[in-house]
Image (cartoon, rainbow, N blue to C red; front, side, top):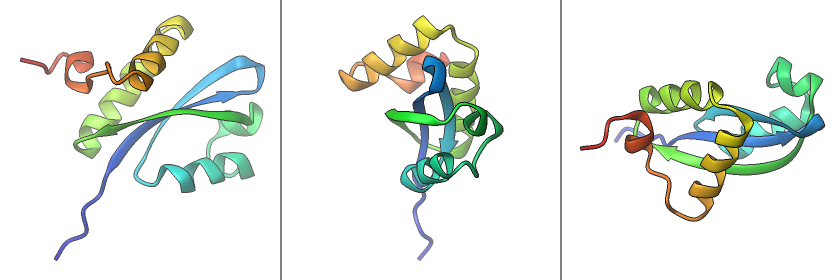
Length: 100
């Protein structure tokens, strides 16, 4: 039986109050890699200070599209996404324009 993979977009607060957005199937392992300085150039320059949130996605494609869309947002818009996710009000399909 094939293993089911869960896809996530996650957000980190990094040095300098920057917000890093990434995609992973194992968020805990990816966060450890960021903390070790072996994951992304950005988090080597601006080490992570806090894990802010993770957003489950239905597929790799959806996760990568969501990651790209969030990366294009302003800091204020990213903080809104985080708040909506924490409060349970964030809908991936609506954010991506795939909602009915």
